[in-house]
Image 1 (cartoon, rainbow, N blue to C red):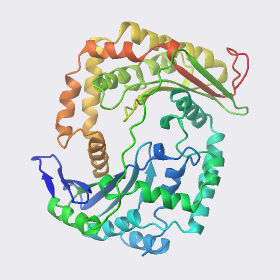
Image 2: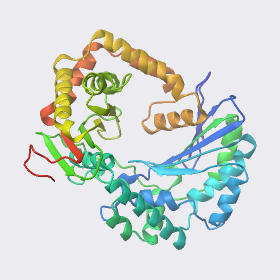
Image 3: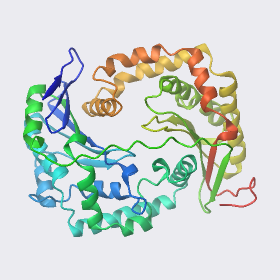
Image 4: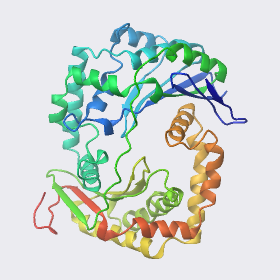
Length: 430
């Protein structure tokens, strides 16, 4: 067993002989403990003919095991006031719960049973299938959801895992069988891929002992983590309009495939995005489009560095008659940022905003657990919380403006409009 220990407020990490990684942060704010798990079993691992499989697994995995029925699992959790949440993102299966300190051992045993031994009962599979299909049909009628999904398809074409619908389609979900769920679990759930964060009023040695008791005897073959191919660089503007009548507004999704999380320019891109569309009421985008011109119900940008190049996305919701003006304004702000960069004052404001927001991110056990798992996923180290402020503070104005020129170009943007709007630029609606 290898151990690495940090001092002060930093967490403590330990790896079991079977590969299970545990990270513990002792806090004393209240007598409760957050337990969060991650495994490399996200939607990027979906077979191309079974899109939505990982999401489906996450919806059924806690509905019965070889030892416990769905009712027994619910009773074990409900008796202790524990709510279990499961889900997936592009790369990960995620499980999270909050329990009292005295219940940590019992809850870890339940979680180990759920993660290791699900049986995917037929009746539960069909119930969850119906719920997933209903949600997908609702999204098909939601301009914001349609715009987001179609933008990812434009940014990540040719079967790239980031461009595929994470929850699948109605057709693909209807084709997924119980055997598919079992096979996915058998391949993607294994001890060497499991990381557990335990945050709260429990000491590290007690937490390590309880995790080892629950997971230490798990044996399963390991499989490599997916490293997606580089995102293809768009050589020209990509535009798609999905006309949806009888909607109150049109939703605009506009963006670029940007950077990997481990790219040296990551922190410069974070600060650039903050100025572009995150700071205050939406940075420059919000100030121009929503505040000064009064065209948008919302306008902002987001940046999600990932294992592969993650997207930088601009979103806006507008009345149909304002779509063209809003897109022109987005183009103008993007080109101005690329050509002129940001000012020293904007950089200082962005740094203060981002550094000042860190305590809010880490003010709850759940926030700390999420932070620790993210740092572990990207290999940022157990001392990342102590280094982050310095990493942000050290970014120079030149670095921010260089990354703006690297990433932003209106003539290479992908653009999707969904809602009561016809594509006059292309002459027809898609």
